[in-house]
Image (cartoon, rainbow, N blue to C red):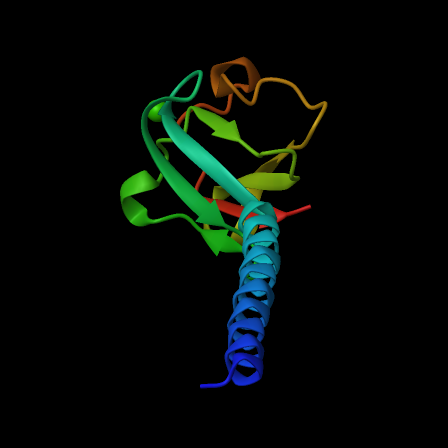
Length: 123
Ligand SMILES: [Ca+2]
């Protein structure tokens, strides 16, 4: 290969690598932000203790938690999102709003709502 062809070839590789790394960064940012959006984690015990389960609320209006988590949640991390927890399935019964500024995410006994939540929806 002549110098010119080799230089063009190398430039092509560098361009390919740079474009791909930008594409990877951009998709990582998009995936990262959609991962946090509407995500909450529910915990078996107070203060984020015991078993935990990740819930993504972005795909439906109301999300019934898995049956093995029914009436078991004692604390919640909303990651700054807003979610309403309901006493019964299909977002029926008593509802409590969990959002930045609302109290007792870490201890639902303070809301008299310990081990009672069955479904969630976004605020
Ligand atoms: Ca519990």
